[in-house]
Length: 41
Length: 307
Image (tube, rainbow over the protein chains, first blue to last red):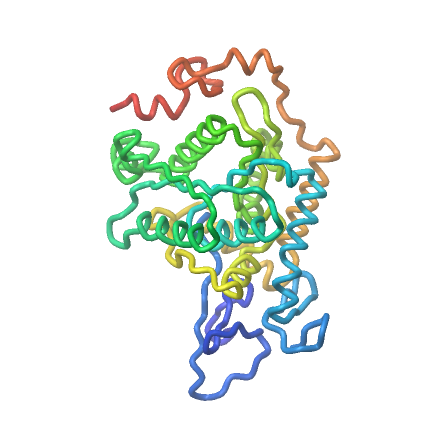
């Protein structure tokens, strides 16, 4: 996320339907969905 | 990363609280966290009839779910703003709110501004200068008016909105940069009732937007994932961007900013304008009867009278 300039505080990461924390090791081929959590109010 | 309570695999790490939790303990922690805030600020009790303003988004549905799980007597209120070009924003949001209520056998009331007042938000924003320049401000004015009226007519005890910590910190930052003392005096999570106004509370005020989203995901709550098309250039998003940069470097920045502001209010840093009940009773809109300090028609009635 850092490499892509995405703040951990503004997104949640989901792998195959499960929330994962920002220290989780991901493997090549893993499908990670980044869900934005900041809305315009 | 491991859950601090049980050592199982964590699903969320909250750097601002130095706390990581597994699914089970997170779903216990957040409702307790919210309940403590409700109790600390004496927002409401199990005896109150509570109207929850819902948008179909993650915050309002997560909050309604928490209040329902905690055993509060709640009903929902959705305002169909008629923002349906391109992504069918309002219709889809309403569907999420409706499905949420149906699954839990909860009552959802719906107001439709096009049907009740003749114009949708896109139509009003096109017609009026304020709408063209500040669509979110105009939408906020309309929603506050309709919510207050519906809640008073329905004789609810409390009106609950799902403003979260990120919302409040962004508003606080904007008001501080402008030194808007009048608004700074009104930023508390509880706005007491007064003639013409129902008591309004914000139980999510110290809950991060990310925490609300994580709760919604873990509880399998389907919510509207898209942003309102009008909010793309909103002032609030502009300030949130800066707050998120600071939060990234110094976790807890938003929380400290907001909680220390509440302490400052409690210490009298921003005295609120005092109006007697008599004054408020006299300052009524001759058309709708809601309180106003314009001296004539309220801003809401003026808006629709322009047609």
